[in-house]
Image (cartoon, rainbow, N blue to C red; front, side, top):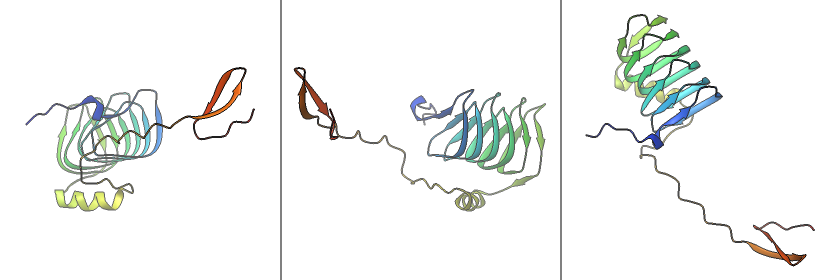
Length: 163
């Protein structure tokens, strides 16, 4: 089995970026910026040292170095790294904690079936079970010739032009 990840299939929130809302992805996600809301991934979520998250993370696996005020719902393994600070509750199957990781909250060990039930009630944007595929390119718009202006043809892509 090939464990390499195609970089084009990883959703990324870069350092300095601020996002509020909900992210749903069938692929892995990396957060290095600031996020407020819910993060749902059918893959792995990696949260870097400079990341700040307020909200919930619902995914299969997490490597967490950043700061978070919210809850984890993890189908398999949550790995709290030495630089992390977490204020919230953990609903996980397995937990790995490095020395100097900070965690304040409760921890509940759950089964995969419990995770599936919880995730189904928490995620508002449902993903298909089929693997993600890039969307087919839209057909190119055909230019429509317009009037002549100074010997140059003015063209529009389906919109009238007022001269």
